[in-house]
Image (cartoon, rainbow, N blue to C red):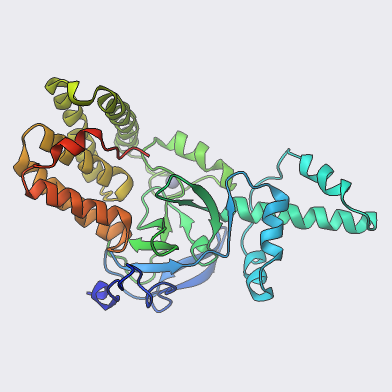
Length: 350
Ligand SMILES: [Zn+2]
């Protein structure tokens, strides 16, 4: 197993050897007709392999606007700046021009060079909007960053890799969601995949393309209907979980049963879609485990917890907070829910 080649965490929980590793022996960048530079497997990649583990080029606040992004880029060493400017820019110019007026008020050079400065700001912004990834931190902080190698991955609504920022190692990781054959394009999903095609295409407009992946182009109406059902189920399950948290120990048994039915339906749909990933299946099975323990179904809960551990390990790796939380959950389930009181109050909703 390739995963065994990765080093174990050190005393501080950090994987120093793998921290900056991008497995260039497993994939290559290639120019494609119509979709710019994309990433393709050049060797067999087993499911769960960490293909990318990349450091950010720039990280900015969610509220950052053009001048802040431009400043972050222009503060980089020259070779890193070059890597930034090479990235695709497909977002439309923004209507917000306040920043131009602010920039002008502090500018005392030639008018022509001011226009060039504005253009550079706009180009930096367009690249940023097209390629940025989310960085979520355990304390609730949220930032956005550019990871130039990972940015080459195109989108698909049935992705074969999964990306996530890992705050424990301060890297973006990309793992294979399934076995990938040499020559296959590596595709991640830019959006939540549990929506019907019309909604997904609308969400993807911001990246300046109309998705033509196999799911979007599929003539199978049933598949689209499954995505619609998943959208409904995820919405309902999350809403019901919020209600449960508000009611605490007063949530009636029959409400748990109702939620469990929805979760089971969601799991079946995900299996049918052959989508085994952290945000949906991992989320649903985590809830199933917690509810199962609270409902006295310890045996089933232990099985679900084991699935969560496997999903988080595959999608995010052993050094992720999600995998760590899954291990704690499995331990609780294996102990027959002895610590289930804490499950009542703790939240897995983002
Ligand atoms: Zn699509």
